[in-house]
Length: 475
Image (cartoon, rainbow, N blue to C red; front, side):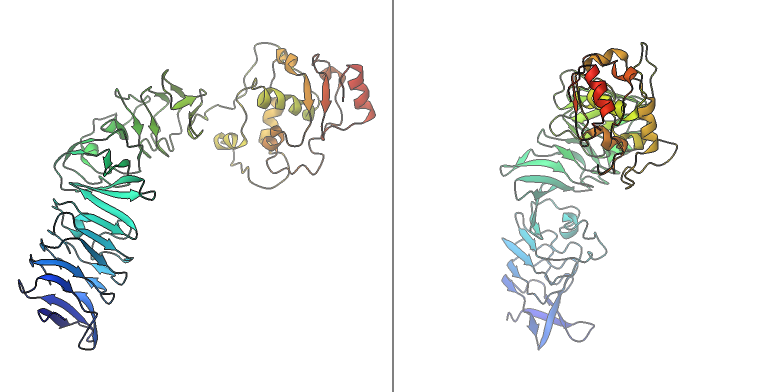
């Protein structure tokens, strides 16, 4: 044991804290786990500060606390310091002013920092190293690797295939330039709160490699404090929020992305036009924007498409906007309508025209209908095995243009048809709820091109078979 190490009995009387007198220790410091028959559990505040000749430190599993400024300005420390799982508390600036390129591996650590950030902010670099750190550090916390690059902290994600911008020095004054890569690994994301409370930022340069900006990444930063009234708030070419009220989004040229939750609860917004330059829309970007009535995509945009009431990402089909206002309002036809006297027969016709040939719009979706229905809350997951009465009425009232009758050439009365799952989402097909037992001649003869009919929901009774035979329909 190094005789220059000093020990002080802790208040509990059964353990020791370790420290060294200023300037009296150098080289590799090996802190013992036991002194005088008692465990060494604490590294005292300022205990090794300003010992510039210390080159490495080995911390035993007996240590549970590293106090404030314990190794402050130990500029000679090189390589790696391992903080064992036994450590429960780390004081502010414990390694403030240590050497550039130093690596700290934090093995465990689940309790809160000493009056500082909790585990939800597990490695606050400005906590360990001080708020005015200028060196580059490498931190590994529970197998997550954190690397400082000037004023930024990057975190390795996805098994070292990508970096995420994890934090920025909150006292940094000026323009931050996010690197597109570090040591050959791309920087693709910006973490929640990464730039939160950075009130002295004058700008940020976001590279093309960034594909996701997470919720509240720029919360309470200078971008929000200096935002113009009734406008979108930008960080470089990304929309990160909004200020005030507006009905239509006025994107600036070359907008490439909309951050998570950026337009949350923008309830005055009624019209969205996606510019051709927009490549990324993050989750919940339009969350609770309940009054959007139309959404269109400019020609030339290859990332998104719109059906007029829905905005969809082409690559994976994720839906970002659904304009539900009046989506299922019944429309009066200009021409003649088909006439039905048997509801189950009408459903079979709708199955073909709406879900197979896409000629009836909008394509009915029970969950969308329930979302926009205001007279009561409809639970489409409730198990009743019966039709939802409001949905049944919608299809009963639905008018179908007579000219569409010529499109019906074949009818498959099958229990697996989508129409039945929309009318009665919990129906299991085990009863005759949708069985077609009778068809009136007047409704059948409207479909002059119908040549074949069959399926497990067709009742092959004599009366029905005779009617089909009369109109040369094979069963």
